[in-house]
Structures are given as C-alpha cells and as structure tokens.
Figure 1: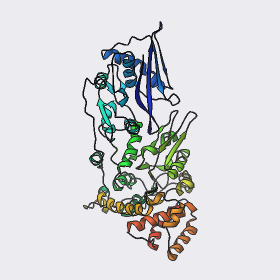
Figure 2: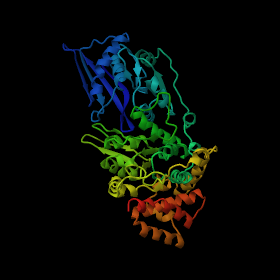
Figure 3: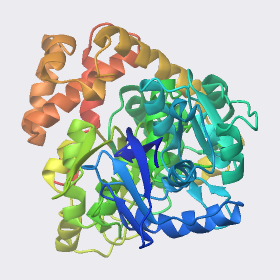
Figure 4: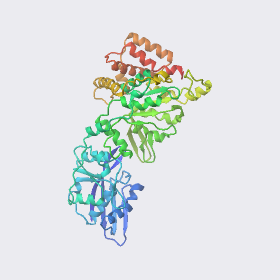
Length: 511
C-alpha cells in the first residue's frame, strides 16, 4: 500500500515543498528504509514515530516499509517530518482514511506519547503552502502564533497525533487560527528603554539621530562609563517602526533559528544584537556544516552592537565588510550555498586606549603611544571606511547626572527620523535602496549635489584628513541625511560641515 503526505522543509530562511511517500509491502523481513537525504535528526524520527503511533492507540506491525522524502536531492533537516511520516504510515497500513489529505500540509515533531512539539521555520512553511495553493497547514499548537499571521491559508494548530488524525479523517472539527499581523505588530512594538533616560551627551544623541535617519553605521569612542552601551541600546527606539514586510523577514530569521518566542507571532521591534567579543567569525556571520544564521542576520532590519571593538579578533571583524556592503550573507559549503539577509546598522564602541582614559581630562592615562597605536591598529582602515559616523563620547558631567529634567524622549526623536525617512523614500522611489546609507554611486551623483562653497570645505577636509574615496561618499550621504532632517531639498555648507565633523577621529586617532 502506498500513501503520500504533503509537508515542507526549510533552506536558509525560505521553505520548499516536501512529499513524504510511504510504501508498505509484505515481506519476511521487517526492514525499514528512510531515503531522501535525511540528516541524523530525521533518521532518529523512526524511533519517535514508532513509539508515538503505538502510544496513540494504533499498531506498528509492518513487513517492509520504505519512506521517501522528495525531492531527494535536497537535504532534510530537523524533526519536523515526524508527524507527516506517522500520518503516512497510518494511511499506508490502512488504519485511517483521509479523503482531504492532499489539501493540507503537515509538520510537527512527535513526543514518544504522541504529543506534538514545536518546529523551526513554521512561518516560512505557511508562506510556502500559500504559494503552492494548498488549503491549509497543520502545525503544533506552539507554532500557531507565527503561522497564523499568514493570510489566505488555514492554519490548524493541534497538540497530538490523535487530534491530527481526528481532523484529517473529519471526525474532529477544528477552527483555523488567524492572527491579525497589524495588531500583532502593535502589541509587540514597545521598548523597555527610552532616550529620555540618558543624561547629557546631547551631541552624541544628535549623531545617533542622524544615523537613525539615514541608516548610517556609527562608531563611538570614549572612556569607560561614558554611556556608549546605554546610548546604543536605545538606538532602536528612535528607528522607524518595522513595516509588515520587514517584520516578516526578521521573524523568518528568528523562526528558522528557533529563537522566536512561542507567544509572539511576529518580531515587532527592531532587533538589537550585542555579541561578546569572543564570538567566532561563524557565530558572527553564520555558517557551520549546515549553515545557520549568524549575528548579522539576527540583526536584520535592526542594530548590531559591537562593544569593546578592538577586543574582537581582527579576522572576525574583517568578515563584516561584505555583508555591510551587500546587505546579505552568502555561505558556501561543499554540499550547499545558503544566503541569509543582513541589512543592519553597525554600532561600534571602544575606549581610546587600553586603559580607557586617554581622552578623559579627569583621569590620567598610563598607556604609551606604542600601546595606543597597537590597540587602535586592530581596527583596519577598510572597516573604518565603512563606518559613516564617528563620534567622541566624553565622560558625563556631574551636573548633567544630577539634573532633575529628563532628556528628549525617543518618541519625539523618532518622529523627526520618520519625516527624514519619508523624504528619502519619495526621492529614491520603490528601489531596494530604502535610505541614504544604501545609495549607490549613481544615486549619490544624482541626489547629493553640493554648491561651490560646500565643495571647497569638503575638498579641504579630504586633503587634511587624508580621506579615501569611500569616505568621500560617506560624507556626501551623511550630508544628505542632515539636510533631510532639516527638511531641505539642497545640501548646504552647514550640512557638509557637520558631516565632516563625524569623520574627525580619522585624523585625531588613526592618522
């Protein structure tokens, strides 16, 4: 007897259809074969399926059993094929009859007692089933929130093999689960921190506002305790709210990596990732034998914060250069090539010297010039060129700390950022380039024109700071963003002058 059950697998953050074929024949040998490039977790499914079927009140007495996971040329990973294999075995052994088995895809991990456990990538699977024209998808109950945001398809959340069989055989009527994505975004879009909690550092807040308005990368340098980490953690609160498409992309990354909270259907806030300086290049970029997303992909549409930048391995920092330029990471292995999205704002923080007090007027620095040079030399010129804004963060004055008044709240700053982003959207159109930081050379030439006086100021700065051609483009982009914050159509001299100030550390520290 032959049976076929529809399911889905994941490759990168996308999903692809999988047909679970089960064939049972009479034989003197009770042999079971599982084919279709299964990994170790899929091979172990046979033991879980065996126990789950028996503990759900069915028998597992077969003679010759062949299970094929098609297409056979794509590797199948994870335990999500437990449930479709169990349903296929029950169909092939004629223990159940499911007239609408071809209308629904089935996915889920089985416990030994027949309960369903959540799987990774349920959102991507639901999206793929909708594209394939299926009526619906059966998922574990804990995956209901993420799969339920997909419109145009029935999402049936169940908690056991017995319930699944009851639904597929029309013995149990289950309502489809639906989540309003707009409401889910609103419910999970609040932040626990706010810019009003930051005392002083007004010029740094201005620099971060410019960075948020244009999507620019930032480097902050200052002594310990100046507030670099505190400012960085609050940067997502002034970024524009996630659009539905951005939220879906970010959610897919977290879903396939198994990091999505079961009570959240969508990632509603801008991601903020802060890996430790001991992170490996694979942990940062992604990879492994079967590539998984790294920190740069988990920060997609959000902020990647690298604290104590010189403490990171230099080779680890260098692998950031490609995703910073391309907005995605392509990981190639002998058996596969996977691409993950990686559009993030890079925010770096570092001390000016090994002891941290080189620029602090209140504490004496004991580092030698050679030690300072070696410390800062761990950061390469090409990486610095890809950072648009460099700003010094001084120690906070006591009067600012004791001030009873709060700073400007994130909500007010975000409104200015949203207005600036709206100007960029109108200017750049419906291209993939959504903010000034991602403009290409052709767009820079078209939208970043400056007049004679501003050209003179920029030429002088290029000569004085020995800036590269990439730094020149960065200054023009930042100038365009500052003009957008002012609501100005043309870039004026004061806009260029402020943008140049955000490159002054090139001369002061790395020259």
